[in-house]
Length: 238
DNA sequence: AGATCGGCCTGGACGC
DNA sequence: TGCGTCCAGGCCGATC
Image (tube, chains in turn yellow, red, orange):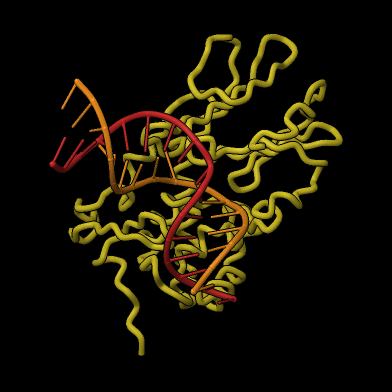
């Protein structure tokens, strides 16, 4: 089920490769291959035919190249849809703007975050205001914008800071090829270095690099949530 | 509308 | 050593 319809790519040519949020989109003429790596997925090309643990899908290309999906926890998906028809993948259909594109417009972000009564962290994780942020980068962006993760209804100044922080964190993380704890690898199977630059995520009990306060971990929206109580004070109600 | 919880999977870390 | 429990980078759907 998770890879249902994958047989449909047989004989197709990859015309182009794109990404929307955390989804990879391979255009194959009239159909499209949609890939999400979930928590533990890796996608890489190889000429070796050696067996790999947790290998779920292998796409053989002409020549000797294989495109391999390895995914220990099987939360990733590979799905074939008619081109551009994402009806069965609602998250993709409702996906917000790309954070590093001009479509991620600051005034629109200010409006949306001030109106919503949902805590800012789950709001960002929903992918609808802006695409591509997961648990790590949400925590890091909120820290840099000095906003408590449970804040509801951002002020204009906060939202503007957060808009900038999201872009800054993602640019830095991309420059360092992502964040590797254990499983994550890029398309060349390299680890990402951004782990070393994390300010709050996975730093529970360690000291804030800005104010020296102990980083706290709590559960919010069912997700481990890291923040600095010194830098990210809950906004006082008046 | 919005929040919480369980489920999907597997394996590593940790406590006893 | 061995077993049980908890936890994890994502996301969806049921339920309150």
